[in-house]
Amino acid sequence: MDQNNPPGPQDASRQLAQHVNIGSGDGISSIYSQLTSNPFFTAGFGLAALGVGARIGQKGLRQGADLIRRRMIVDLEITRHDHAYQWLLQWMTAYQRAQLAGSHTVEGQASKQGFLSALVQRLNPRLHHLQIQTSQVPLPGGTSNAHFSLVPGYGRYILRYGRSFIMVNRQREKSFDLASGTPFETITLTTLYAHRNIFEQIFAEAHQLAQQRTEGKTIIYNSMGPDWSQFGEPKRKRPLESVVLERGVKEKIVEDLQAFLGARTWYLDRGIPYRRGYLLYGPPGTGKSSFIQALAGHLDFNIAILNVSERGLTDDRLNHLLTKVPQRTIVLLEDADAAFINRRAPGEDGYTGATVTFSGLLNALDGVASGEERIIFLTTNHIERLDEALVRPGRIDMTVRLGEATEWQIEQMWDRFFADIDIDGQGRKRFMAEVKEVGLTSSISTAALQGLFLYNKGDIDGAISMVKELSGAHGHIDVR
Ligand SMILES: Nc1ncnc2c1ncn2[C@@H]1O[C@H](COP(=O)(O)OP(=O)(O)OP(=O)(O)O)[C@@H](O)[C@H]1O
Image (tube, rainbow, N blue to C red):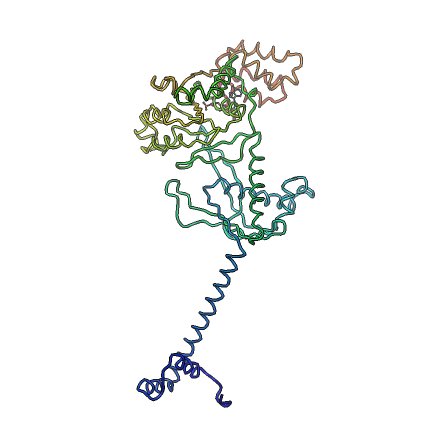
């Protein structure tokens, strides 16, 4: 090589030309020598050659990385539709909470949390990007109940689990589930192939955590598009004794339901759809919803709540939802009378959209029953608006009125609130005398009574002195 002329792009292109066998002494050769004497051509050609080289190198690297990845790394993808998706999010959230408790609250709080503190030790404390998940349920009277929870946000995180590192990638896809309007989502966990067994451990822990969260609790579902979705945290079971119905009413319904649950094969052997329907009616605040919630807890069932007057609830959607009720779940259809009013007429605010029709409700109740039990409760404040066709055995098998508090119920309610301080029962006697004097028996709701007792918590005289006010309010005081 000429020491005075170090190799440049010209040489590179020359070498390339040699490689493709362009010989000297022919026509092409002279074109070649003209071109190579042009510095712009040689520089450009040289750069292109370097680019090709770099590309080849890059490709090689990529292939090498792919090979390593295929051999040494393992991915696990969970889509939003899988139960494990929420478990995993909650598992990561639990870690977050433990972190916050450990670093931002009184010392030692993290160690008191048992399971959570174990998580702290096992995970790398680098998960700082959170997302808030809010669920809302409309309540009667136009208010609503909201529940908030923090879950890991979208993006990539590194978690340390034991001695393994895991790349977590929570991704929201651009495409949407057209039915529910929610974006598709996935979580991908990546770790070394040799550590793949930790996935099983993580899911076992996430499942255990999910079970702990629901143990002794009632899950409430409400509808989200065509699916049922869990509303907020599972609720602590409401004891059946905390709901005071007229003597014997609770027992009658509980016995009927227990007999039904024990007769599965009887129904199936005879080809009878395995379902049972109950209608609870009566004025507001008499314990219809509270009783169903307590009953679900007593039987270890969950509740799926649907308000028949909900806007946008079409016959098809109702039917579809009833075909995919989660296992061991009581369906509660509130405001059943809404299906009997001509809702297509504009409401006060001009709404003329879709709602459930009478025939839609009947069809949904008659819908295909699977081998699983189906228990439906309907509630209404306006029994007079319902049609007889609804209350046919097979659709509604038992109809029960929950009315204003009877003397017996008022006494029971008193005991629930004051038994511990009204040891000799004199307070109850005075209270009942007052109640009778102003004629409140069977004309006041249990909710209003509860309101009175809550207002005068621990104050027997206060409760007695307010009876007259209750009567003045015609049995309605604000219990919120
Ligand atoms: N029979 C009852 N025993 C104990 N608490 C009751 C009873 N009735 C009502 N309450 C209390 O009053 C409140 C409202 O009761 P709930 O929502 O169950 O009434 P409801 O009959 O379902 O009313 P609505 O018809 O307006 O839906 C709850 O806090 C509940 O605890």
